Image (cartoon, rainbow, N blue to C red; front, side, top):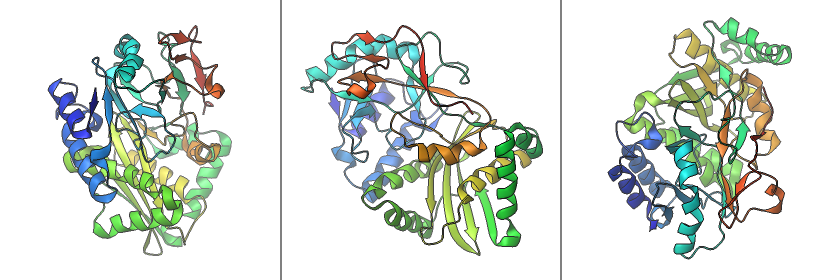
Length: 354
């Protein structure tokens, strides 16, 4: 059935899949309400989004900000590595209903290509999930934290360790740089900074970058302990604004806004290093920083290169391909237009190790 975003969130809450007591923001209807209000106020068109839901609880939509025409998990287009409201077993059991539900609503042969997601249920993220060869597993490495920052640096490869120490020497308070990591969400002036710099950097694609930042702001409104914000100042002026979301023991990078007219090569990597250092120094219970090296099939290599500079551990997340898949993905595990699993005899994975 087709639903509006608000109908979808209410339906998920009634079914018990969304709850204020859920462990993460993606399963909290209050956070979705705050996000949709901010989306409508800053971007517009929230009520025009259409969510297609199956009777088994799976839901999809076309993200108008992505501009690729593919269907992905409902409302999660701008969210990095979101938690899903279902387990792998639930997904595989419900998969046969996906395409028939689209057909019932008059949508023939859709292209379903989700980004990476974190399914419910205990599993070791360092390895693909062996019982699920129907899904494609993407390696998006992350940074495991250690008891001391020196021990963390020693865990990096020699090349990365040398680069990290160089960056830490380059971006010091003596050279005019100041880093502030806190739970304080952006104020009105900082939100203007996000809007203005996003428009300067991305042009017509600025709304996608804005939506990425709106999600942790919505999280902070109802789960202040699950959102962090890092402000980086260069010579007293705000230069970078980074947002992060907490899921379990993992701090996930969600968005970065930089001052376009005053770039500092390497500063983005330095921010990740300073965040890791701050978490370790504060004895944070968090165990990992996930810089979201890879979130889908079409990520350009340039995005992954910088983010990999702080990682020391593999992490795998699945994505779903179904329906009318382009020929370039024909050899990947997928649910074809007739509802049959193809190329799903063994686990397939993409993405480089740390």
